[in-house]
Image (cartoon, rainbow over all chains, first blue to last red; front, side, top):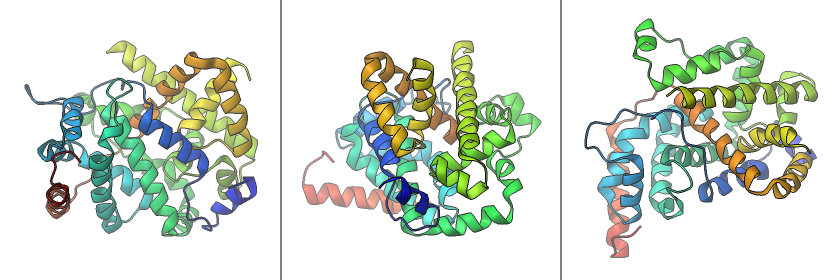
Length: 234
Length: 84
């Protein structure tokens, strides 16, 4: 897909995952991620770690997949829903994603990263691919055009004081995202959750391409720096 | 491309937001920076987890899990082996 083709994706004309996304996602399934700043979920004493479960899945242990599903299906479905905005399709895709986790488990390497990062990358790739194949992209665009000012708020749900006191992972991540200017949240939202390229974002928002690039770079750098600080503190 | 520019591009790369012409420059710089570049790219994937973990977990029906596990066990039976 060349640059002109990519600009047309915004019009819902493409059914393929863009090569840039696919390259990043594919390489990620084989190479890997940074360690998360904090444990993504609280585990009961004696419970197998995520890596333990992945290693068991690699040996064909279906019960390990069942446990991994119980642990992460909520996060995986939330990510799918954030991308495709349809509960029924999200359930179908949730099942497909965990089936792919089962089938692709052999590609996971504990030395190269954490299971959740691997699963998130896999999920995002599948969801964006599904979004484009079903041309739901156009519908999402209509929704965005109808309420563009609501997008950043919709991404980061309000949290209660109780949740803040609990200091759980979601609240920490939410606070970090909330600390970004809304303009930066918006372009990151469109890039990460809608799979848009910079040109597509510029077309969609009527923001100059250079401004989109700057906002993306600044927002992602702040997020990245924030994650490093969290990791240092914990 | 200096290393700071490479870092900016790496963050765009991991979320699939690099334009094709930028991707070529990025891949060239990636070779130039070698293991330091790869280490940084791996760090950037932490952004994926952060975005996912910012979302409120969504509920799925029990039927989804039951169907998934039935498919897995059926595949195991078909292959006749324990490995997926």
